[in-house]
Image 1 (cartoon, rainbow over the protein chains, first blue to last red):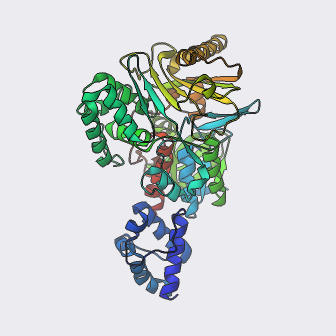
Image 2: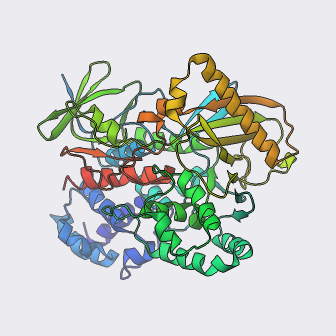
Length: 82
Length: 460
């Protein structure tokens, strides 16, 4: 998967978690916490969905790397390729 | 062959259903075991003579408008992945706290209550505003606080004893397992959910919530087994390994989440003498259905917290029922009225043991007495009330016991809570009322939090 596709997969997950939000205009460099008020419970869901849908494991110490869409793509792209 | 699950959930009440959704969502093999034939537990529903009736829920607390992201309700919608519009929430009109010489009205806008307090108790306005500010910054969801008396903390802000009693009526009767006082963190949860966030009604009442949860469970292939009461929880050393059902069937599981209550759950573990405190508070509820809407006899409020004394006695009465206080609920009186007929529900504090001792004939006569007292209260509050009653029913503490399974029909469970959900057994956890989050929103949040913490995260 290329970075754009990785971004799309992450946005799909976020859209499924935050059903009432418009996820079409998310900014890549602003934290998801600030853009959508996602809390630790929601980040746990993102991590579990990555595992469920893409068999990607994110260890707890790496949770901060999911802070923005940009950092998600940067961190996850190598894992998707693997 | 013995079935083996990732998690067994005891009880298909709000917390068990919510926990089941979370676990099913992430591929866990889950089975919810329910003693009754329908889900909901304390918050349930039934149909008689074509009338649809709700049990438990008067109003949904923690209202938040569409698009709001903070607060427990948006959190539940996100965690369960239910769209906001599914519940079709309709806000309360206004609710009143009525004492002999004082009356306060509150709405979903806290400014109204502040101005009411300013009018009736002008010296208390500043204290009340400071109390609100303190509550807003208090971390009530911390999972490891000890007991702190809410009356003591609130007393530092509110000096007038009558105002203090008035402010405590709704938080106590909508969630406290303790008599006359409650843990401050639980008071904070109730204060926010009732006064700061506010009340609403899902279109169609509690059915709408339960059917949304059932739909989700089905989509995640979670088994719910009705008429499946648990006879005992099977343990091996300090580990819970499964359950035996009343019909003798054995189910094995990695984890067990029990919403049966703390003393009730421990009582199910073989060889354990229950040593946990049983709560003493139970209720009666009278339901009246009649032709015209409450507006026709000038009843415009959503809820009335009525008390015929300067002190609010939230305690087990020495008699069958304490008629000196009541909650009167008008399910028609929300922004949108989804009911065909007029309906009133009246809740009184009652004594389970007294009810339990009655023989059948006296039991029925006492039920009729509760109903007559309820009608009397409505006529006192609304002299124009003169409706032909189409249907009536009265629940007693025995009904509460039947639906919740709680010892002594204790509506809000034990006075011992387990905020982190743990028990003396490694993989046996408590969710629901005895975990300590209150109200219907609290119970769903409890199921979600405990499923996340002990089963989903424990997995990592």
